[in-house]
Length: 103
Length: 210
Image (cartoon, rainbow over all chains, first blue to last red):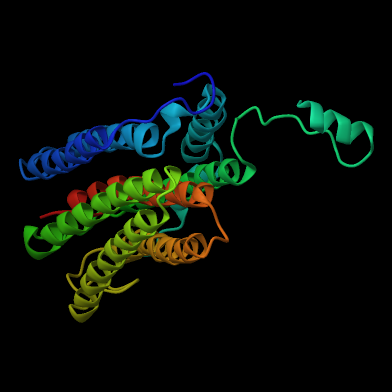
């Protein structure tokens, strides 16, 4: 990440390579799905691949790599902290277990 | 602080303004903050889907490769390609090529409309097959419909909103009322919607493939 303001951005070749990489990852996801692994293993693999895509997209497509570091450190860790607490620690994380729509 | 700003502040003609520590316009920072909050919304929706799924012993996995997964793959291709066209539009706007930028925003809008059309077509096929927000024609958990239509509906709403926003930005930019920074800021939203789909497709479609 750049320490100053926007310094330079990648050329279109880089963007096209990332786009092709994303398509390849989606192809891998479908391939793995039809190998019929155990559900928890499939979930783990799909989440890892999606997180890789999201991180690369954030850095390059959304240009976070070329913004000041303070933007990354302001947005990303805090968002991840809130998501973790919301989904695993704070009380609402358990509420859905008692809100089943079907008996 | 620049000399002119200091002079203005000393003369009482305006507040002394420091440069943003983020080195960007406030509208772009606001978009980043909105994206962070929206990421929380989508994550909570997907985690709620996870809770429903784990809590339903008769969870349904209805999607066959043809047409559901294949349709999802085409939608993924279309949305990913729209991010690429948006990148071209932003580059053109930054280099001052207004005509090219508006043209590529137009391509992005077109791809967004195609994505929404494919999505709605899939929904209507599912409705015709008996699926609904609380209906499961296979006899399994009705929570599937609730989770699927809620999460994909939330994403579809974002895509449609993005198409409208892009159209407004293109119109304003073309008429000279908006500038390249508006195009770049709106592109952040569009790329975010694309990134969210990178989670929605595997979790809502592939995890429910037969």
